[in-house]
Image: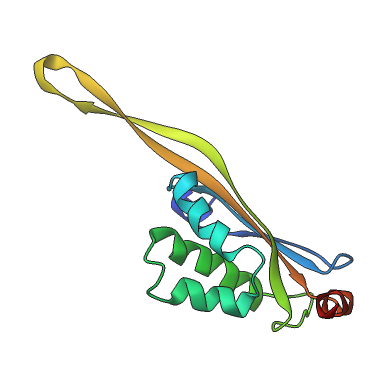
Length: 139
């Protein structure tokens, strides 16, 4: 049985060959959904090469960038459907709230304050640009 930390850091890769897409998700990430969502909104609809360059650059100095970079890089590198890596783009990217970890902090006069540690689920879907997409963009 894996320990909890390995289970959290291991992405689940679901590939379906009939639709030619790669779906990758990471669950129970110790980060707020709103902080991850601001990075996801920037990369949605972009090509994978462009996304990896944006996330690796110093223009986005957010903690969520490294996690999303690892997810996309592992999805592209473990491509068992044999899709063209140049034609892959992010067709769907979403962030959902998960459970909230609750801790108590001791305060003065015997009181305690609750500290909430939010978690989130990240789901990214990669598709290959088809020839029909290229034809529609030139019109």
